[in-house]
Length: 297
Image 1 (tube, rainbow, N blue to C red):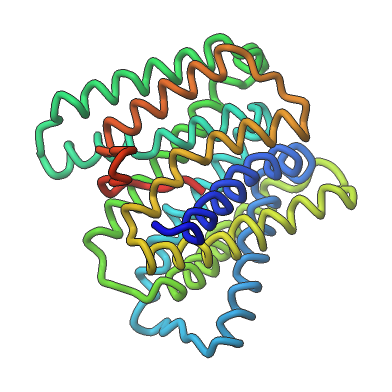
Image 2: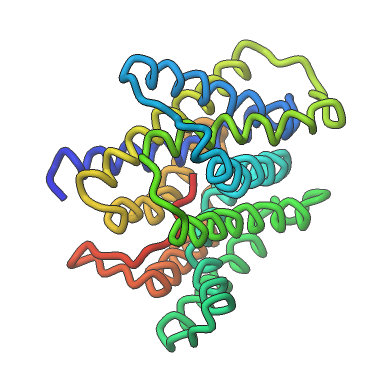
């Protein structure tokens, strides 16, 4: 990974870490369904404009089932679950819970593929569980009403990313830009029926609209373009090291812009989760290698 790609990786982590900040701003005002419908719609429109400029086709007739599958498990459902959790949990906690996706992937891979869990992977799972327990057990957000359901929703969102990752390994190959573009339109269709049942509880301010626009265009549309550029140049395994950087920026943005308290439990819990994730994925910092895992967005 050269300097320019490393800087792209840092930029991508900063953007995806910021998604939890923007959801924390928008979810209490718009509610999960309205917020995420805007997010995926703005992302789809942005990618459609890019696709038109670059003359890239979706090929819906051949790939519509693939787009629906990824659109549901990699975008619509996890986005909704994270937005639900964002009404209660801090951006810091959400970003760390998102980093558990590779751990869910290891468990699912063992269950579906019937491959025994190696001792190092098992240790990583134990550490990851302990890190999450430390993070949420000592955080003030755990005492808020509905915190337990919000934590479960965020963990379920990370599980969705792992399901999408396992599906993608066996799915037919689709051009990366078309993957991002098609799944955003699919996610827009999936979230749309929920809107009448979950209207916005409040009227958004200009600041909230700015957060929603950033969430859709920046954290979904532009972020996917950067991510797939990294995959093209350094490969998917190196690009997935962004998993380890997302919580750093999630915690940083929450502290800087929302005044979230970064306590000892935040730092310790985050570190333990990331060490567990490294063991599960086989990440070796010296060599810069990872095994395939899900990347949280």
